[in-house]
Amino acid sequence: MQIIVDDLTGPEIAEFLTAHVAELRAISPPESTHTLDLDALRRPEITFWSLRDGEAVVACGALKALDAEHAELKSMRVAPTHQNRGLASRLLEHITAIARQRGFSRVSLETGSFDFFEPARRLYAKHGFTRCEPFADYRPDPNSVFMTKRL
Image (cartoon, rainbow, N blue to C red):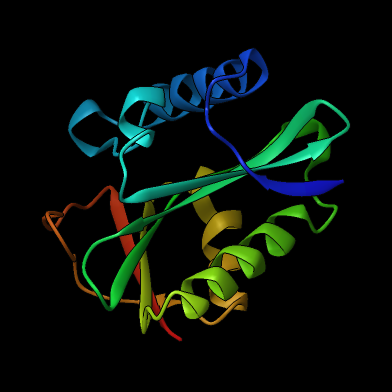
């Protein structure tokens, strides 16, 4: 398995992200769903990675530059068939290492407050993320949990 910077043009990643967006939109109310579609992920301030097993996309994640010191973790997902294998940790460690190399001093994220998101919140806490106030353009939302990590 390898982690690659993905240009978001292949059918495999399009299918993977379509499933991701559909799943999150089915769980969270529209006003609390902050997932990005393919077009939104293609912005110059975002770097997107996929973790591939051969040609199959099995996980993904992105880093969005907010300013010179602060970045946001976006679009973390592991395929249901590949969960509980350490892939999310591997990808998260990769992305935070790149963030550190790029000179960011902090990485933040937004995730859901529902039980469905509890494994994600545990993963982030295990990797040093702590709860914080809303950042960037986010506003307080009972359906959201905001977390940050100093690098």
